Length: 339
Image (tube, rainbow, N blue to C red):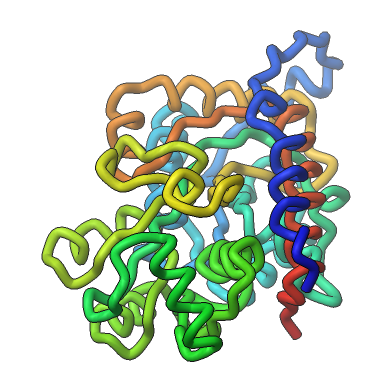
């Protein structure tokens, strides 16, 4: 592993800045007669919203917040369809093969669309060719938490201990390819340390074992970690965003706490199969933009530690292209692969 690796990754991330993902004002374009009729008739039946993750996690909560408001706006039920497997890959492959008629939507997530293309040797979908991009919703950091019995109270202390212990320190995740894993592997690489990955079949069991002392630490979603932090069963060391999170302002960002340039956030949005009618794409993107301005929706996302990050179709696709490039560097440099 080269000593300049962390600096190089930091430089890559700086080039892919948040300034590059500012929302683009959609240019109105005339619809064909067929497109206008399709838009007027849509939707005429329930819509399926597929996500490749288990119920109860952050992705599921995000989907239900958006799905509920979207259902109210469209006048049809938006049914959440959880299909957890392979960091969302199985669900994405299934959605890619369904008709692009607006009645099957999918939760777009960092792992599924940006990390998996480099993690897996083969996938049943192409992130850029097989989907029509609709809108991005939010971006949220993870929270680095350790078991209180681990003799560290800061990021520098953790890095120092990891260098002494070698691979004896362990980190838990919700599975191979999960945000818990790739966020931790980036930390490993930039800090030039080695901690051993312990994958679980879900974030819940992983959190339980970290709190119980079977595993040293986890990069968890803020909403799942807060109860255990407040009860004293987990100790927070830092958030993975570039700045502190409004949900936990007393906890420093890892970048300011001892690992300059470190940043890893999770984003969630919505896609549908490639070839979707332009009028339906515009309708759905517009409805998402509206619901993200609602105060109750903002409040719900704030409880998750999430920041609203609306991106319309063109900008969302551009953003994912940049994210694929960024995470391909991380996967290549860390050797993080899945079978």
